[in-house]
Length: 156
Image: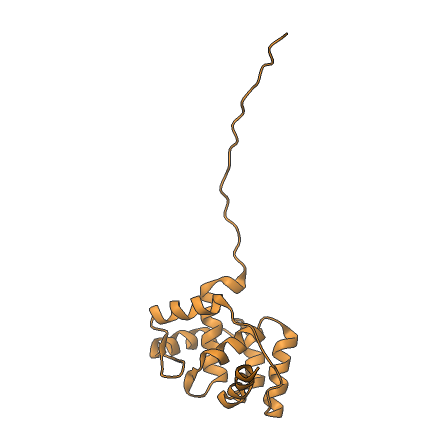
């Protein structure tokens, strides 16, 4: 019986960079967070559930439109929204970079954060879509509106 010649070949793996979705890039999330605090929050501060609401809404046009409508009607009709780990990471990084500071109820933009977001706002093309939508909402999505929805979670 003839011997079979088995040839061993080596597999070679080449590590290539993989693109990171914009939604998961920390600087993008931090800037978006600071825009919400600057343009749609009173005193540059907000609770964590409210920040997650804006983060969730900014991911899709139909969601942000619901926030625009709620701001006009002064009533929030959403029953729930998503909590994104990418936002939690962005908040931790923003705290570490002194762009945010914790408050007793949530987070507030620091002086360094205000300088950073002012530089972003100088470029009219930067975050143009988000800025237009947040301008429509203004400061009309209040903590009380978000708290009212959150109370419904506790009773469910």
